[in-house]
Length: 138
Image 1: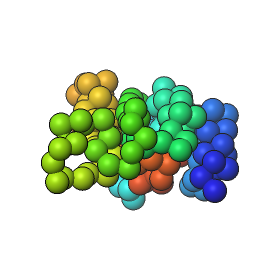
Image 2: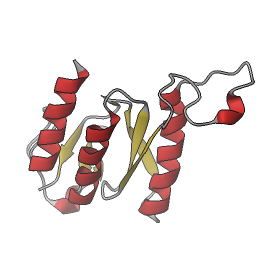
Image 3: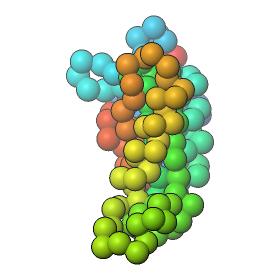
């Protein structure tokens, strides 16, 4: 089920078309988080989204995008366990945190490093599920 969705979204992202059934492509100056909660993704971030979707299938991970829609970063857990991602310090504790949640924090941290002063980052994908509607800038 997700494999088909991943291929469709990856093809849309790499082709530079509209993703998730949202509005028509817009100019790059309009990228970023919009008042209605959608995100317009710039070309560099779209490329990272395509790379993420190719790699995350069957694994746990997350992708964050800068609020201006220009930068994105992801983290994919090396461990294929549903819990604790790659945080081996949690192995001997009674705490179990879903891997996607841990990956989201790591992806957001990486994204902030790339985003500079663009107002921070938001998590766009956890595993293969998107959290915001998004379109690609032309």
